[in-house]
Length: 230
Image (cartoon, rainbow, N blue to C red):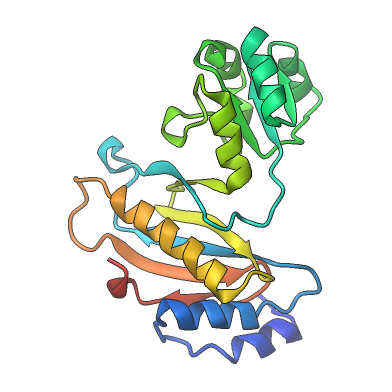
């Protein structure tokens, strides 16, 4: 893959094969975020889990103390009093059955998170094929299937993010923007790592955190020493 001049120049600041401590990694990832827009900084955590086994799955949510820097659009599936509560709490979109064709046929996806009350999961389930692959399906473990829609909306707006294993047993999570201070990114990272370590399945033997990398949208990856995190 051919890289641009800016990327190549930025990558020179990072020593290949070096495992950095968190403070150094955060500093480097900020320095190498040189795009003209405010890049997102992400953490990529490779675990020792084998996601093919149900007892080695990881899925949860955590509120990052400084948020992600992105305005999150929330869609809530609810009816009657709960629909009114969701609107009052600041949901961007609220509805029920009428949203099914809009999403399925019109390919409407102007939302980042889906919350549903338990009694609406029958309706939401019909969207499983389209919401599932996009990681948008509400889930009780992530706190997005709940009767307390006000708390769910407030948490998400405050910086709650979901983490889960992808098919290669890696967790990809946004940590904030390149414009954040090093302290803000570090705080968010520590909060995430603590939550992931806490979520370690009992069935996983040996080293849990195989590799941890920070990167910005357009910048090179910076590897953190995982042995210092566990």
